[in-house]
Amino acid sequence: MNLTTRRTALAGLVLAATLTGCSALADQSAGDNAKAPAAGPAAAGTAQHALAQLMVKGPAPMTGYDREAKFGPAWSDSTTAPGAQNSCDTRNDVLRRDLQHITFKGTSRCVVATGTLADPYTGKTIHFVRGPQSAQVQIDHVVALGASWRVGAAQLTQQQRAALGNDPENLIAAAGPANAAKSDGDAATWLPANKSFRCTYVARQIAVKAKYRLWVTPPEKAAMTRILAGCPDQPLPTDSSSGVVLPDLK
Image 1 (cartoon, helix red, strand yellow):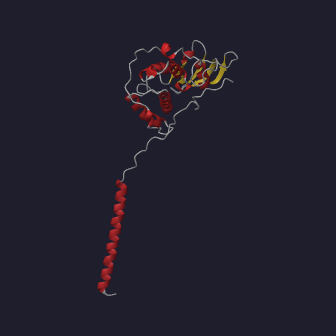
Image 2 (tube, helix red, strand yellow):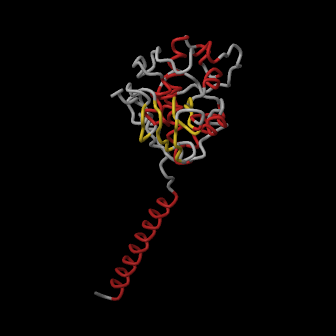
Image 3 (tube, one colour):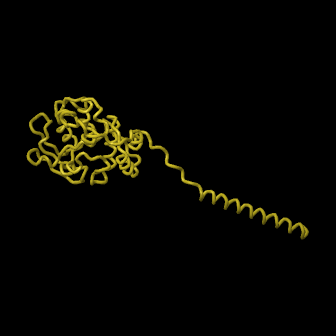
């Protein structure tokens, strides 16, 4: 190979190497600048997915609200709610579901005399004894009845409202002071102090609202969205979910 030929071959090799390097750098640059894929829609069966289906609307006035007149007698067993008409009032049904180490008054296995509550709202353990101190454990409406009136319950039938007030999915045994602090608050104004329960709590509210076709207010949806961002796979509970379904009277 003469000198001219060698110089031509060497120049070709240098050019090829240069082009290869540029190609690699271009590929790397494209990869560095590529945007991460956008998050897809929430999976079906999750609380996030159900929240996206709820109507968003401002709250209606409290005009006409009367708890007993509009929702029926408290803890009635004569409703169409899941688990109703089992010869035990709703309050004792929920105590029987949510308390541990239970003893009963009498032989019917309905009236809870004593038990222990791992309070989901505060994370504390509360010992329940029926009597003057039993208010330490109360039954909370997850979607408060007053709050429900402002977001669609006023348009429900009397039968539907009675079911809403006694639906096990909408009821949780909780510390009395926490229940009192919540009052008629929604997720925008009150959340459990126990942060580890907030995803479950918000999912329960969404499930109840979906079941009874209640809407969410803009601040309420924003609060729910913020909580569920930390638990995007939180499942939407159903009537048969653990922690919702009532135990048999056996």
